[in-house]
Image 1 (cartoon, helix red, strand yellow):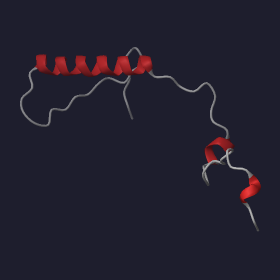
Image 2 (image 1 turned 135 degrees about the vertical axis):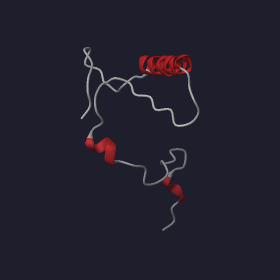
Image 3 (image 1 turned 180 degrees about the vertical axis):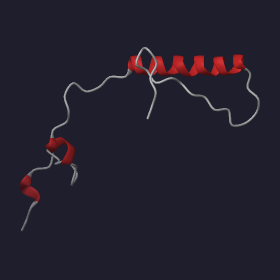
Image 4 (image 1 turned 120 degrees about the vertical axis):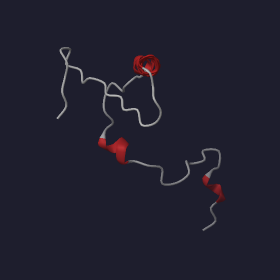
Length: 76
């Protein structure tokens, strides 16, 4: 179960696994990661509509047809 702050957001938890990070170093890391996340989220674009079942299941089973080669080559 996650706890939420007054804004409804889940608070950030940072665990230092090695070394002795100072509060200033942790603040710098959090600032860089936050800025990276915000810039990535602002450029992310979602599709307007979900893909249809046909588009999801359809896949290329063979090479595309060559329109430059006529049917005259067949000598069955």
